[in-house]
Length: 164
Ligand code: RP5
Image (cartoon, rainbow, N blue to C red; front, side):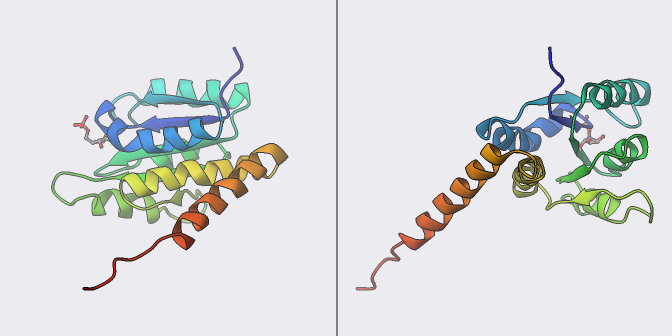
């Protein structure tokens, strides 16, 4: 079986509720992905094995979601030069601000591209992966343009309620 174009990884199966939004965008655009729950601190060896397998198979980028002291995206980026898109998962006590800062404050030299906390960031990470892949795929680029047009058309057609 051909290795998927995008690797989606999350620190816990509990993160899937948020990370499914990235997967949904990829699926809707016909981009292949493999989604795994693998933790940087609970299963580091398994995580490294999976990254190596995905890279060797020709994956083009990773989307990593984690909550709390969210070092997962940085650890993925430490193992590959492929682009890593980071999704901060909302956390119980700090609502994901901890996750966001852990990702966006990566020290110089090993970048991760950090998205918004939660559903919107997850969906946007999926759309950003589509945009990167579309650079080398004209059909995908056309689908992305059509998606943008559909959004714009919906706003153009919006009618606000009249006051009585
Ligand atoms: C992180 O710790 C995970 O990404 C998750 O967001 C958070 C809590 O994990 P669980 O206790 O829900 O498994 O590693």
